Image 1 (tube, rainbow, N blue to C red):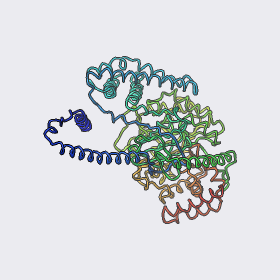
Image 2 (image 1 turned 180 degrees about the vertical axis):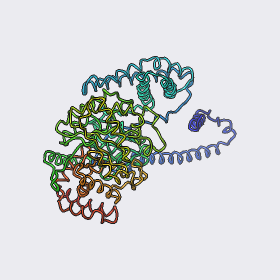
Image 3 (image 1 turned 120 degrees about the horizontal axis):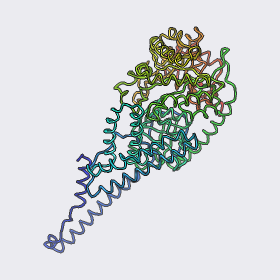
Image 4 (image 1 turned 60 degrees about the vertical axis):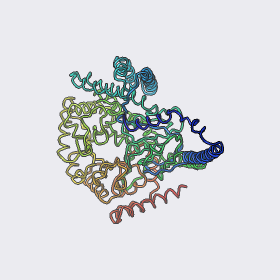
Length: 640
């Protein structure tokens, strides 16, 4: 028995102990002394009860008090609403014994959860079939059929009876056994069914452990998502109008919580220390996406202030949205192009809403991670075809699979490493596992006839990387009889070596896009998702600015198009600086387009000219930041 169980056992023993019989002793005490004894006992009891009450009231008062936590603001906005806790800690499953007389109750709990999950799958199936199409909903029908399998209907219940263990633990053990069995299956399609079984098992465990593991946003219209951290796949799951804000315990400026919040146009604060521990029974929370504040159990006065700020924020957003149809300005004889970063097909509508002039980055790996399996060629083809058709007059840059780093395959332990960001990731995986690579290339080339496709290679660190990728591409084009068709190929500049040797690399490709998130991370040796070193993640560091300028200068010299698709592109504070460094193509979350266009239209040419000549004369990051902040404040003050 663990320590926690031992303590609980001692407490119950004390509570259930027989009361001491004082009568015989009292009979031997004189009546006078007995009266004094009762009086003293009463006095002590009163004092004790008074102390207990004060302690209880104090504790109760503390629980009702609002609590302010600080974190990192990553998405502007103000949010006020109901807490919705998202938990994913499957590894925290407790294994505990179930008494024989409680087995029937445990089985009842298991089957009740089984039925609930089956209903969840059915609801999801109906929802997706209605909104997207029946074909996209087929996976949830398959999930429901898995729940009807003897594994879940007979084997797991029998194991609960046999081993007298809780259902969550039995499911996990059964899953481990099944994974080993499926590894030996030769047929690839059958072998991959373990991914579906794993997904169903997870959902069942979530349901048994925490009924709020997957938030039910239908309960309230003002949900605030609270989580330890969010992963790339969560950007697929949490597309909901009732989600008004996000706060996470871990994460940095470019964490996936930030990306999700931007895409949903909601406030977000990450890196909030002790967030999960502080929740208790609290149900309401306020989030300040400007100052990085999370206010738990806000008072009525705070709620009133936040409601006023939300109204102000909504009016400000409408002013920005009125600018979306205004043409972007021309600087140095070249029109500024604003593109959208897209994570999935659901964001197409948002890109259209804000007049994106094409797609500067489509992240293909998130589709694989969301479905917890490798997508077949035909599935990929349909996705790419839809994206290309959605932008018939504009370019669509689709990035090759960028797996690894913080974008793990939940359905394959093969790619997990001690240092994933510097390990076997991205094109290093593709060049090793050519079956995956060939499948994606074939899907891309087949879809190319439906629009202006451009293919981008991530994680390039040398000329050899580009030549190896191009060699595989040529083979696939020949197989498809497309060798005479030119499809633009570009690279992500996110590794310092690529920025340093950019001229040599640009001679082999048609364009380049600067991925500032990883470029900053690798150049400054700082984990962008680690809140403990968040202060070291500095986009305005002189080394970063020199590398960006180096890339834009090389592009200008070789007449190759250069863009930026990292988080810097969508941050109004950095827009004048990026223009000063020579960038004319900015790709960002669709929700950031109105604010960035507002900044483009309102920034005086003299500010850009001054920065272009003097960006490297600021002694510190703080000095440059203050200059940019003052410029931003001046523009915002003029709007008020």
